[in-house]
Amino acid sequence: MRELDGRVTLVTGGSRGIGRSISLDLARAGARVAVNYAARRDAADAVVAEIRAAGGDAVALAGDVSDPDQAAGLVEATEREFGDDLWNVVCNAGITRDNLMSRISDDDWRAVIDTNLGGTFHVCKAASRRLLRKRRGVIVTMSSVVGVHGNAGQTNYAASKGGVIALTKALAKEVGSRGIRVNCIAPGYIATELTDVLGDAPRAAILGQTPLGRLGAPDDVAGVVRFLLSDAAAYVTGAVIPVDGGMGM
Image 1 (cartoon, helix red, strand yellow):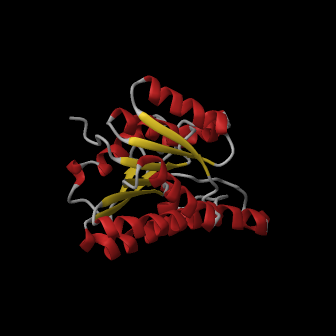
Image 2 (cartoon, helix red, strand yellow):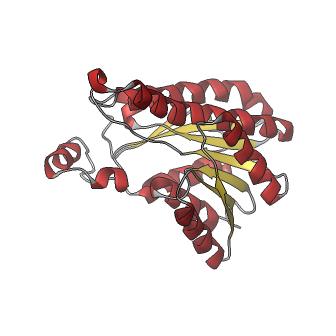
């Protein structure tokens, strides 16, 4: 039996990059996947079509997680589409607005905090209410190596991702007694649209700090998400797992 057979899973930001790989990998493991997107309906539809072509079950759901009502609506829509059976949530949606602190606008500060940290909060709040009633379920949040160690030019992003770590640990303590696990992944530099714009010098600097000597692949993150959602991780909660090629050592 596939390890996530039939388990309804909401993946925020599930249509591109790391989120796309997570959605596809969980579907291969048997999960029924709600693929959330904020703007690119075509990308979400493509992921859903690929899952269905392979015999899986998926649906695309629009929603901006930075908006509390839309975030709650995503959870409600997931249960409506799949018959009131939410089991897992992956809070993957996130954005960057990089600049030196002295140059970060108030709008760019708020956008990053509201999406990365606020969005995680809004989705976890809505989902945990349902999972508490069921007395089971798993939530995986997405931080970053930057949220652990910081990075020049990313004070807004670092603050948001550091906040996600703290949120994860606090929530894990709140809901553990009800059979709900909450864990966090902290990826390093993963080969996506965000890293495609790196020049040769920044890329070489990153690889020089990474013991494995390569950028990560989205599937490297997806495999860890699948593990955390599975029963193989039944005694793992409140953890922050780096997927960074050793960069954070």
